[in-house]
Amino acid sequence: LRAVDDEGEVRGYVPSMGQMFLRRFQLVTQFRQALEDGQVSVHYQPKVSLPNRTVLGVEALVRWTHPEFGKLHPDEFVPAIEAAGLIGALTSFVLDAALIRVRKWLDTGLRISAAVNLSVRSLTDDGFPALVASALDRHAVPPELLTFELTESGVMADPERALPILRELHTLGVVLAVDDFGTGYSSLAYLRQLPVDEVKIDKSFVFGMGTDLGDLAVVRSIVELGHSLGLSVVAEGVEEDIARDQLESMGCDVAQGYLISRPLSEKRLEAWLQARTARATGHNAASVLTL
Ligand code: C2E
Ligand code: MG
Ligand code: MG
Ligand code: MG
Image (cartoon, rainbow, N blue to C red; front, side, top):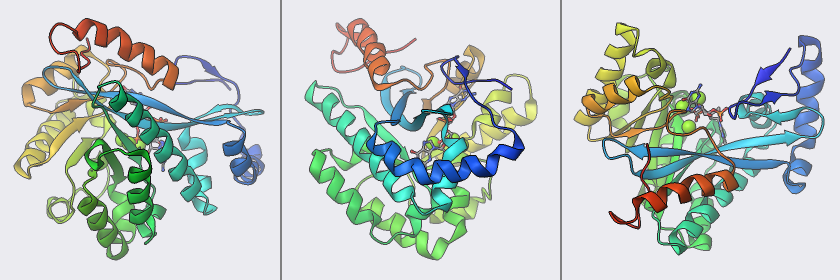
């Protein structure tokens, strides 16, 4: 079995069912050491505004280059790390990396925000808002340049505990986004009760919108629902011009996807941004234009 990763490379290792248990155990026991050894890194995927295509932010997406298993995507290890109670270490690592990155941009005159994915566990950790406040302080990053992406199922797992934590995060001034919208409970009433600023349309609908009228209708209604609730609407999984054009004509605010860029290592992201900053000078030196 072979698999291709998001930078188009062949991934080294896909386990058989029989190897899964052992592998999961290994990943969990090796994770802390892997963090220390520099095997875990953060890739960043740009989010651009529609219609003018300025880079507003990046989403931080964790990667693990395992000495035996090769380059692992989060879907392959985050659930195990979460179940083993180790997600706090992962979240802190990604949060620090993202805030360091945002601070570096600020120092060069760029205002680009970073979005960090939160697992359910963080939403049941009473100490989490204080940890975030101290990280923002330590890195001297204004809260509005940090976004947390949470899934509906994450919030719904334990709403009584999650809601006060979300309210505290919101009070800090960080941006809150509902990720993968449309795949979970997605009740309108429920979205109204959450202190969120942004809704991200799940990529499965965005993939289909060029050919499937049902998907197109779902995307259109999420854009309208989001706007009627005063939320910014982001589409993930934008792979084709036609999807971007349709989203733009619907008034969707932000696009993210392979059409704009795949998730990139920090080094490749810097080169990507630099090429576009150069193009943007003359209009506005402090913004980065794409496409
Ligand atoms: P997500 O937050 O919904 O992130 C978007 C996923 O879609 C990413 O997969 C990204 O690479 C992929 N993607 C973006 N644009 C396109 C596109 O145009 N086409 C296609 N085919 N895919 C696209 P990735 O990086 O494998 O991450 C998967 C999930 O793992 C994320 O879904 C998120 O839920 C979770 N995750 C990633 N990083 C972290 C983290 O630091 N902490 C936690 N708790 N979860 C994370
Ligand atoms: Mg996300
Ligand atoms: Mg998503
Ligand atoms: Mg997802």
